Each structure stands twice: as structure tokens, then as C-alpha cells.
Length: 484
Ligand SMILES: C[S@@+](CC[C@H](N)C(=O)[O-])C[C@H]1O[C@@H](n2cnc3c(N)ncnc32)[C@H](O)[C@@H]1O
Image (cartoon, rainbow, N blue to C red):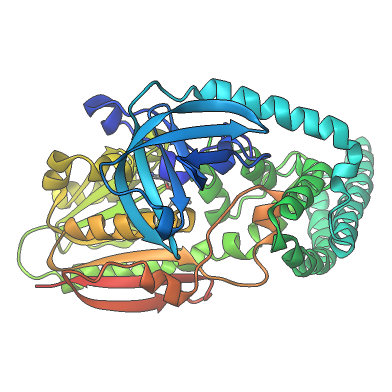
């Protein structure tokens, strides 16, 4: 993962920037992905989770956990080189899966992030130089064979199709003739690709057994498979993350819209096969579920006043757009879109205003350019945002660890009126979905079982917790009702 790429828990919106400054946080695996940093908290070894210029968080076993408010000595090393030495005060403690996650603020000096990055990059470079191409030798043989098969598939078809396309262009073939051929070849490639990816999914499972094997296997895939997908927009944007984080609104649009994108036949076919990847293909059935839930929220809200609905991490807000395109205006609606990316908000806002233009003042859309972190740290904003009838989030919890997911759900429910509902979704655990995102696209998702998602939900002040699934079963949702 490139260090320019951000994790969802560290993305910052705009409100926070304006209201109070907070330094950027980096997940350790995004910043220092190739090497495991060595973190010492006093005499105890800890696992670094994230780091910013003036703070860090880490995991320790319960027996080693320093108490709240305590000042502790911190030492951070990379490949034996000291990256930081100082002390930090414990400001937050969460229990997570048998470990304690500590949040601490630096009290002496600061963490020099660019220096950490450069220490990391130099050490990683030297390791790669001394390992040479043997760095891939720990990749399990079955998985290497799958990578080889995928690479041969891509090389074979791109060459064949590119040659044919050049010939067709030279012969002055019509766009219709090119499309006919493209669709025929797509059928053939789809069958073969499904076998290739099924085998890669299957053989990649063993790579998770240890971190070094996983890293070597991912790097091998990025070396041999990913670059061959450069001409297929969905794959290449998913890998390079041009907006700096995975799953941006443009990527979501690739998934929601069936346009054939790409400059070559091969690129367009692979773009389409990328759309058919399970977690991409099923965003439309996830959207259908949200459409139903929007209608339900309106039916369930009594009284004459507007129905207030908020979407957290709203992205392109496609479901609201489609909902408004069909809405009869019988109730006044107020939507609040919350996202850390103002480009996503402008994209969505423009479409929602168009979709509701005929309804005049029956529909109001407000955009909040902020991250959930800033939102929950800002009592004034929380106050303004209270009393929603329904708040929901899809395509967001998949990027959060359990403690953060719980905190987000808990805070979202504070924005809901008594008797109102929250709905939170997460990609479901499944054997056949990890190879493409994790290995080919370096796009890490936290898949959850239904029970894991339910377990991450708050219970205090909640009168019911109901699991739901979309028609594809690729996504789990949990519906929470706030006690009346
Ligand atoms: C995968 S998209 C999902 C969008 C939309 N909910 C959907 O289902 O189409 C995730 C969105 O979460 C936003 N996001 C990521 N981290 C965030 C944060 N910390 N606070 C608010 N929004 C965030 C991103 O900007 C992006 O628009």
C-alpha cells in the first residue's frame, strides 16, 4: 500500500480543519507497510496501530496496559534505527479482541513523520536490494501458479485483442462491428477469467498464515498481474487510488453505471469483468436495500414536519438520487450528507438538486464536509445534527476496526431522535472475495460475519438490534432503533 493512501479512520474532512486543527494520522501499515515498526512502551513491546505528529495508538496485552492519564516512555525503531524517543500520556483505553488499544498524546517532542517514512523507505529498499528477486521465493507454490495463470491470461488476451483492434481500425470497421466482436470475446474471456480468479481466491488463502508471506504474495501479484490492468479504468483507479483513498465516489460510479469504459477493447472488457467482481457488482443490490429503507423511514415517521435523514460517508449518494427521481413529494424531506471528501459532496449535491428540482422546497439537501472523527469531537455540530429520523451508512464500516465501528455507530445513534433508526452495513465474510481487492488492488477491507457486525453495535439506549441483508447476501446490515 502506498503511503500516500489513506485509511478511512484517518481521513479528515473540512469542518475540523476550520474549527480546530488536528494533525494527520497514519495507520502504521499504510505508512510503514513493508517493515514492522518496533514499539516499546516502557519495557513492554507493543504493536503500533496509528501515529501522528503528536500522538499514537498501539495494542498491548491487558497485563502491560498503562492506566489512563499515566505518562509512559515511548521508543519507536525501524530496522534497529530509532525513529522516535520521548514520552506520551495515555488518553484513551479500549479493549479489543483480548488486547488493550491505547491512545496516547506525545508530551515531549514530536514524532517526525517524514523522518519515519524515510527511515522506513531506506530500510525497505536495502532489504529489497539484498533479497533481490528471491524476495518472492516464500510465496506458496500453488499461489505462484495462480499468479502465473492470471498473468498469462491477461498477456494473452491483451495482445490478441490489441492486434485485432488495430487491424479492424486499419480496415475501417464500424464501431458497431467492433462492439459486436468485443461482446463475443467478453463472453469467452469471462468464462476463463472466472476460473482464473476462483483458483487465485482458493490458493491465496494460505498466504494469510503469516504477515511476511502475505506481503511477498501481494507484491508478486502487483508485479505480474496488476500492471497488465493499466488500460482498464476500474482496475487501475482502484489500484492507484487517484483521490488518495479507496472507494472514492468516481470508483462507486464505475460500479453503479454500466458504461463501457476504456480506450481499447481489452481495457473495456476487463473494466466490465472488474464490475462483475462480487463486491463491486453487488453495490447495486446494496443500493436497492437502501432505497427500500429510505421509503420505510418516510412511512415510519409520524407528524407533519419534515423527515430528517442522514447518510454518513455518503459518497455519490446514488440511492438518494434514485429515490428523489421517483419521489412524489408527499412529505417534506431533509437530507444531510456527511463525507470527508468535498468532491464527493459536490458531485452528489448537484445530482440531488437536479433530481429534486421539480419538488421545489419539499426537499432540502445539506452537505457536511467533515470526517466522523471531527464530527464526534465537535459537540456544537452534534447538537445541530441531532434529531434525525434515520441515519445510515454503507461502504464505510468495512474500513474500520471493531472499536472504531462501535464508536461510530454509538455516535450516529446520538444523532437520531428517540424511536428513530440507524442502519449500518458491512461486506460479508465470504471465501471468494478477497483475492482481487487485497492482492491485485491493494484495497484492504474488513469483512465481517453478521455476528461480528452485531457485536460491534452499541446496546445502551437501543431498544432493538435487527440484522438485515441485501438480496445478494454479500453485505450485512444491522438496524438499530433508539429507545423511545
Ligand atoms: C466506499 S464509499 C461509499 C459511498 C456510499 N455510501 C455508497 O454506498 O455508494 C465511502 C465514502 O466514505 C467516505 N469516507 C471515508 N472516510 C470517511 C470519514 N472518516 N468520515 C466521513 N466520510 C468518510 C469517502 O470519502 C467515500 O465517499
